Length: 118
Image (cartoon, rainbow, N blue to C red; front, side, top):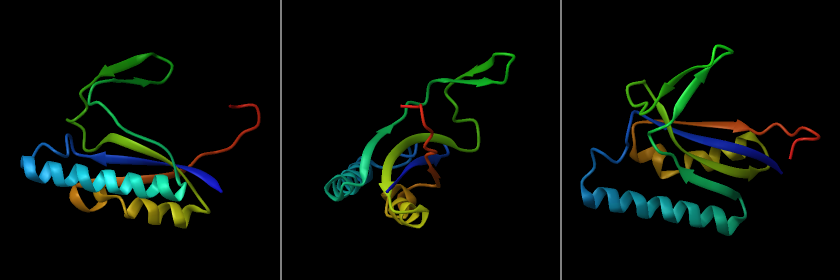
């Protein structure tokens, strides 16, 4: 099994334009998705991210404070999963309700395993 990070990207707060009922339905779908990943043993961790933060560029130490919603897409959450290969990881990502309910994208990246780290 390989480990993968799934980064959820949207244009700002993806729940902002939804009615309270739509927000509740979306949160319920996400909960069911996470529950299924936990039951299958595929989920190692998942969390939403705050819009605040900082971006640091290069060796000059230049940084930008958040929120970052003025950029095209921001990372609003992540899933740390295990899968047989990239193809399976992509299928897991495509099952995420965010892929269907919100405007934005999902990035799937394999985690490089290196001796001496962790």
